[in-house]
Structures are given as C-alpha cells and as structure tokens.
Image (tube, rainbow, N blue to C red; front, side, top):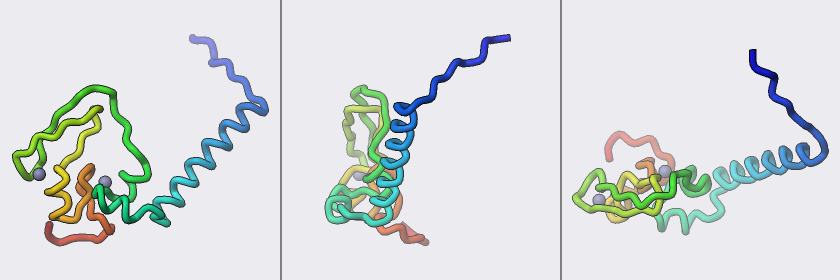
Length: 108
Ligand SMILES: [Zn+2]
Ligand SMILES: [Zn+2]
C-alpha cells in the first residue's frame, strides 16, 4: 500500500485558496454582467469563451473553418470552429459556435 500523501495547511494555503475563490467568483460576475460586451461582440465571442479565456497547448496549429474553405492559424492547440467572417455573418462565437446573445435558435 502506498504512503498517504503528506499535506500542509497554514495561513499561506488559506490565502491562496481564498484568492482562487475570489478570482473564480469575479469571473462569474463578469460572465453575468458582460462589462466588455462591445469588445466581445467584435471578436465575435460568447460570454463563456470571452471571459474564461483559452486553455491549450503551445503549438502552432492550423484548422479549416467548419463552414468555408478558410484555413486559420493559431499559436496554440485551442482552435476556433469558425473563421471570423463566418462567425460574424451567423452572429455566433467563432471559438465554440454558440449564439452571441445566448438565444436558443431553431436555425443557423
Ligand atoms: Zn469560414
Ligand atoms: Zn464560445
């Protein structure tokens, strides 16, 4: 049987955990309040993609737009699903494809 993992807990750990929680809650507030709406719509990006940022491995990656022939290039493995013009025309997030205003659509 393996040894149990040793842990320490003190003021530093308490401060770190509290800071992490505050950052998380502030980000949720931003997602709900949408303080940078005009910048977000200019991308175009949905609230979650815009305020959550991107997580991806650092590697030059290319991907074809899901609705046209455009080849897009990225500095990470986190690639967009649509090119910017296609996302603008459809009023959807270029990163994930969600409606920019969180509307439930019946057609694209
Ligand atoms: Zn496209
Ligand atoms: Zn999105």
